[in-house]
Length: 365
Image 1 (tube, one colour):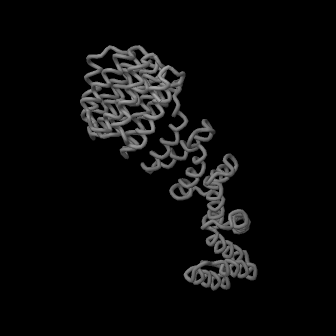
Image 2 (cartoon, rainbow, N blue to C red):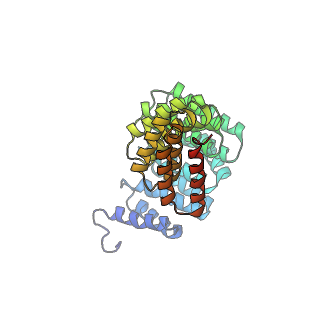
Image 3 (spheres, rainbow, N blue to C red):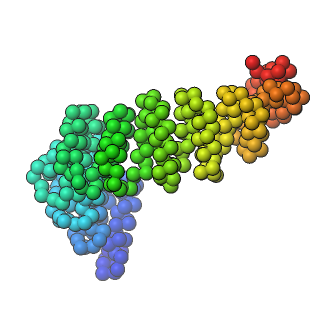
């Protein structure tokens, strides 16, 4: 291909495609020279900077840190001032983190910050890299120092919120929920006007952090922010359900739980959590709110809509109990018999026999 089409339009992109496939297959020794070939033969091509970035990744994955450092120098020198240099360095920072070269990456980024004169975008990414590596190395004081330096040096930079969010993500992955949510609150309070691609994910991550920290009021508040402020966000279609679960399991606010489960179905119909929400609405009415008529109606809707769902057996049992509590023992026994007939195992049949006995006594006490 190279010999026959060296002057053809699109040849650089074609070689990059082949190199990318080698890299995806784990053949980094084969991907590296092809990515470098593009850089050396078409340095002015729009894909050259990305090929140089991928060449660095190959060397990192091969464990040749000296060569990776040399190629990073080529990236910074050969593409100085390039509009895509900041994003390219961002990917390199992430790769140092992902490949486990934490100490080497941090030292390299610190050296470049001290000795390199590049665009603010690129220098911001290097400072973020120091914080990321320090989290991985479990050195909280250095993380805090890196964050303070980042804010001091780039407080007015348009990508400051994005950089801090990267650090918050690493805190989350490291199970440092308190540090994560504190940084997320800094982003929200200090930089509300700064836009970045992952901004709609911020309240969802904050909600999960607060949930793990057992601050369920703030967790639910942030789950609400997801679908109220960012209804089309990446994780917003999950937020009403998890907010409902927090209310049902931990806050013991069953009316709010029902409201959030209903919102899950109204705002995001047809998603995987639609049926899960409907079933839990029925459980809230049945077990906690003692509204047996509404619970029975909801269980019936669930059985009719999701006849093959695993929760259908529990729905038959709940439905039978609701009718027993409402005084309609005949209806309760008929539904429990239907559930019994549909059971696929002897253990489940034994459970339904127990439910039938309870129904004859007016339901589970």
